[in-house]
Length: 497
Image (cartoon, rainbow, N blue to C red; front, side, top):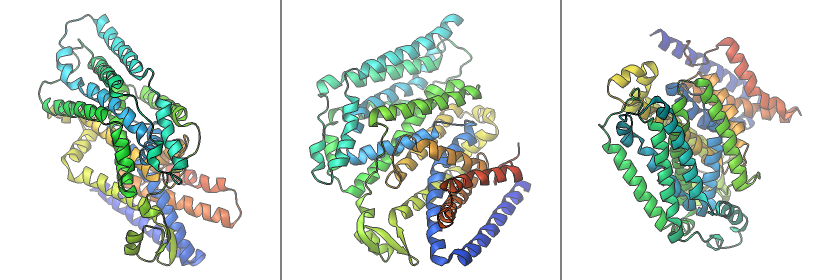
């Protein structure tokens, strides 16, 4: 009850401050400049929340500070841009990803048998290392002589020529299926090697159950079936996507970016994070190193250049819509919002942030998974004793958090430049948002993101109006975090340890 009273008091004080600032802003700036700047602030706030939401969800259950989160935000933008512009690269590598994921998911199937092996402690330590080495060797073998850079170049070529020609003419011929089949097979074996290593053969301290394996078997079968389908039609699928309506292709790009984030998050948690849960410093170093690796891979694939994703037709037509219905009919780039001309895609970003907040709220408060997550925060041992596989829940939550970051990246791609350092920029704002709202509080992250977005927007406005350095506006978010830490170290909705 005392905690609820504190939360209500915090909300009331925040609302009073907001009302006061709105009144002062309207009086000082005037209604239209104030509304325009506020909408810009809400746009930035939505982008900050898309990064902070996953950070909050992961930290709230797993107590893991993921320093690769911003890199996944960046990767989501690149994958979505690549899919929307020319998906040849995506469909060229997707069979390898699904095959590897199928192999990794076999962990829960083979683990009950492997931990029963009677082997010496020396081999218990040696076999997992050999498994990881073997997995790397198989993965590298599966990539030999595959023209990955040529596949990645398809998006850059198409981006420069789509406006003057048929996008289908920029499709690159892929490797024939007769030569390609061996690659998914090697990646499946690589995933199996990772499962073998993660299972820790012969380690009797590990727990595993033969029950509830049906779901895992179904997922593995689905992934292998998807691998076969994607391999058979990897040349036809890019053409089919490019012939789609631009709005539908954008929706598929958003889903592709989120799905990529989910699968990547699950693999990262199983392969890199899970062995290091008891060593938090190593987790921080691992995720930090992973972020550097991702940045370098992106620069190798797409060069250290800046790209801009074309907005879908719903947000790209010339002219200003007078009403919401007129915008939906004509797809205007701008709309008249209470007398202020504002880009329609920015309104979409605001809506996307709100929908993400609603999704997390419903997930955490109205679903069984949310109940398990909240229970796992308080007492993971008791949750495990009730027959719930906490490790699987950890994997799901980590994957979900990464999917949110990737979704935010593709959602932001038509609005902000796509470049290798975009992840670092928004990860910093995401961490500040989490600190401001309170570690582990998704409500606090949402309110904190709005506060930081508005602070940055109004900081930019006054810096421009008063001819001040843009660095002052950039520092406004850090200043707010410092003030919050001095006044309320636990954040707006954080709990004192």
